[in-house]
Length: 433
Image (cartoon, rainbow, N blue to C red; front, side, top):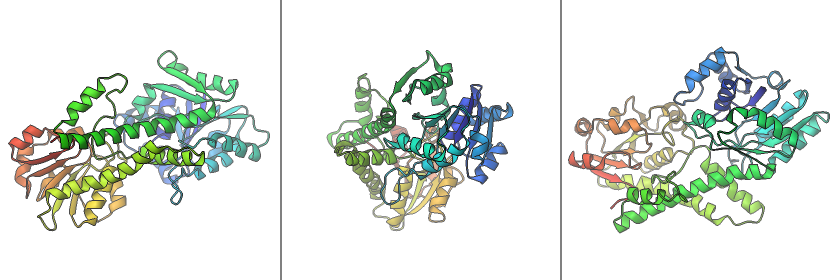
């Protein structure tokens, strides 16, 4: 099949690599000339472990190419996938659909033959109908269907999720479009469940799923607070809960709150959609407010360890919103650092992949360490804010000698508590007395 993908971000690029590796002819389209030029020069524009090798392979095979021209990508395509951003609108906080609608207006002019236009961007219910109307207005003779094809890719593990999907959901309002999607995903036949629903249901499934997972994270964080007061241990409690198959063990890791490009904006968008349709989604609203408060509370916990030290220096391990990615959007680490700076602390931070993106936000307001070890030099306290596994193997006996004060705030419960206490560290973790 010939596939055009509009957007080369954390959804579009992994999807393009994935579909191309299955033998499809994929053209990824992006208006950002700098990004397209880099991709044409075999330079990845985002980080994910293992992505580079498959990227090179699909490009060298001729199955994956890049362009800034919508015309070049869309003409003669069997399916056009919209994977552009839908960030929160700066005023209303609703999903900003300008890029979706702009793409629809432009691609409409170049549709040839029957084409499925698949919306893979996360969009509110009814967006597919609006895209359909735009295309019909711009090109009344176009032969097409608009479907919803929500993505369920985790940042940092997008390629793995592409090849090992829990489910494939498609919102198709015609048998013709359903057949195209069955052909597209034929390599997964018998390997995962394929669910065909009406378009509005598919648009809702993505939001409802992310909102539920965000609520699960907020819930375990509240239980962690309870454990701290009651003498229970959140790791033990979460393990006992996760053994219940009705609950499951995933998303039960207590920490500094959820972040990233999806959960914050999708919970907000879901709450606003509830208001639009006159439904009080109170659990989602409380999750949003609770998550904001939690990040501020985490900053206060760090500051509490150094409250008697004026102009304290705080080392930070981790800037990305989670390990495995370079994405700092809505990262708890970034929000916590911002709060620390506001309250007068000096911050020196390190991340294995996200430093460049963090620099675009903080500029010279913080220092950037070249190594994890450098964070500890002269620090009054060090905070673990992203769960990079490599932090576990640091030589803390040596690092203790570099610090001004031996204090660690492990807000990811990543490190070995007993080992650090034996080394004389004042050690703070989440969810235990």
